[in-house]
Image: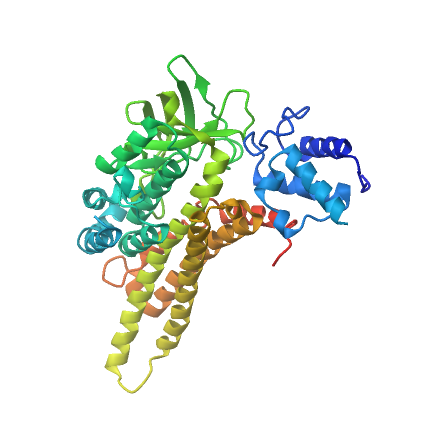
Length: 91
Length: 385
């Protein structure tokens, strides 16, 4: 999948949800969490979260800086989407 | 009782009870009942409990120091104490929401209750962050049945802390932390505990059946309990236990070198150079343990715990465990070379067989291979070096 630059917030959220479905190891089928549910509480391991980070970096063609590599940033669909938006703004 | 008074009591118990019993505990593969009873009388079961809850309020560093002192005499005894403190800290840090849990924690100190760990489970993964068993709610509370591969000193403990999936439909990583209190569970032993080392920890597998009340399930998910408390405490306190065995080995090697030097004054015996290298390694090991314990304590005592959940911290805590478990084996092996046949013999003051067998467990308790795999994965996104 080629890297893309998503500008719209809703597109970012959809892409993030797709990546979590593919790499979050949160069960088969559609992601059954709201945008604000704690992904770690519903079973995302730190191992899986790394795969999610890598997939996000590849898909959005960006690098999460060190200060963003913390649990809070990858805790919910919203927090991940906000972090990506922030990185786009900084570019 | 203050932390320093407890430390003095532990030094005395290690010298007069734990040390003399260690060989028999190892040979028989039995629980070190005399040491644990003495430690209970000294207040050790409440050492990690805050003073306001009836405990002694020791810091992680103070508890580690006690594990190191006990570990010099009997690594099994120190590991039992370490495992107990890890369970207590999990409850103190994450479980005090209900009055029942507060009363329970008080009773650990006042009744000298020993808490076991039931984190391992038969199943395909072998990863404590994945469970097969699950909580089944009923009118009174819940039931769970867990097939544990090892229950730390399970038959000798009063209570057991473990994790399970939150419900039948929860995925394997969606786990709750559960306290099985005496009277609410049945533990049927499966298999034996006839191991190479750590023989006194008496930790065979078991089928754990619990029928408990709602307060026995912590509000905090297991993911939080593990990240904030269980893993950092385990890696620090286990490292202190192995440091104890390594320190004892270096002490025995030093005595042998000094004896040789006394027989030929004016000449530095060749083994003294080996001792110099060994002394350097012991210093590295001590520094690793202290640096990590100080970092954890500093973050945990601040208002912002978010660094405990960072990739950098996870890498450092994993590296601590890998490094200390491996360096301990190197130190004991090299000490054996300095001591010679006296270290290889099972009887005699210079014997190091038990220490060597005990520290060999380190790389297997949460396998270093698995931790390397986790670190390798984290390093794919971690930026700073």
